[in-house]
Length: 264
Ligand SMILES: NC(=O)c1ccc[n+]([C@@H]2O[C@H](COP(=O)([O-])OP(=O)(O)OC[C@H]3O[C@@H](n4cnc5c(N)ncnc54)[C@H](O)[C@@H]3O)[C@@H](O)[C@H]2O)c1
View: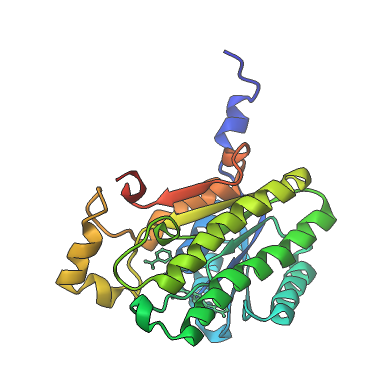
């Protein structure tokens, strides 16, 4: 067998020591778990979302792990706000190795009643916000010339329709999946790998009302072979993998963390 890497190198495949990660939506369920996960494996973390005070909890957890945390207020829909956030991150750390775009919203109505303003809002945050975040960080990675990793957050709803009113959300997540492949293709020459984590429904304060409703719970569980909703922590392994050397040959991939839904 041809094994070029030594045991010590293989042992460090998931090590993020010395890396700097930007996590948008860092106050939310996924953003918090992923920020902590990246810090646990060695990264310093720039945690962002619109309201600075909501980031303190995530920042405190990162610091408890001995890593640096920089909370920054940023509205991902506003290009100036995103550019300003990236500038602050660069001023503080001088580098960004990873961006994880957890900022996202879901507004559900039956398609025939979906207010177009709400449909547009979902597209703005989930699609435009993801693109602006990737673009602003991507530019810095290209300038530095040492590559990097971009991790978008899609959804199983970007692959499959669902009867529960996802005409805006599902459309936006389908766009995020394709955006991931497009950026991966364009930025491979800069050694920037771009991948997507696409979860099934997971527990957060926002999904709790759905998951605690026995009827809705039954509908959602019908298509999850592992038989449970995910937890935010279920995304950590995927994020560390995609941010690290462990996934060095992986780009343009949609990694479903979906309990087998996409296999059904
Ligand atoms: N919860 C689920 O079941 C589920 C399933 C699949 C995919 N996702 C996706 O995972 C990602 C994270 O979702 P979550 O469940 O952790 O949600 P959450 O509501 O807990 O967190 C969302 C985060 O995005 C931030 N945000 C919203 N609008 C923003 C804006 N304009 N600018 C900056 N930040 C903004 C919020 O402040 C919050 O920090 C989203 O993209 C969501 O679509 C969630």
